[in-house]
Length: 66
Length: 190
Ligand code: SF4
Ligand code: SF4
View 1 (spheres, rainbow over the protein chains, first blue to last red):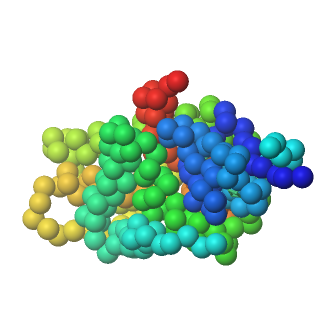
View 2 (view 1 turned 135 degrees about the horizontal axis):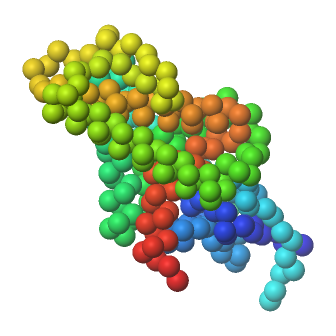
């Protein structure tokens, strides 16, 4: 089962720590407001989960589509 | 996979020097205005939160020091709640305005120059050793003392929360970060 990062958008402080940590450039701060994950790029490594100072990112299993 | 380093990945050196120089000549405190103006101007002119992500030397410093000294524990929820973040921004800005007013009082001759640094808005420390003898108006020096007090206080808060929680806990309640996020919210609301 593939894993992907998900986050509580509402609590995001848009610090960008996740963006810096991601080896795939799969997560980035959108318009300076909150971070967004591009699920096709995310490999579920969990580095962003560790980097987020607000602890609002987690990994979720996704059934791969297509 | 390590990412390629850019020149701006070394701005933590400048941030460390900034704090250090304040122990030698208080006038260097003025340079810190960059950390106030650049993120704000960037957010207003389409740079969004690029400052936090790329150029913030203080954040980088916390990342580096945090690798060694942070307990890396989850931060309490209230610390990233909106009321705390906005409340801290309002408090910080009020204190900033208060400091500008003190500068004005020296400028207008009501008060004389006070050569001291106030930590956590409460504890006055003598700072004569870094006083400047330059032949410039006293209000310029007063602002430097006041501004350095803010910078030292916020660095200290950041260091304490770095040790207790995640390395970059400061970023969660950083007034500049909150402010630039608000600017972006107003600018790009969808
Ligand atoms: S889990 Fe890994 S690949 Fe996915 S967004 Fe986070 S850091 Fe990037
Ligand atoms: S590290 Fe966390 S709080 Fe910061 S931008 Fe990423 S998801 Fe948001």
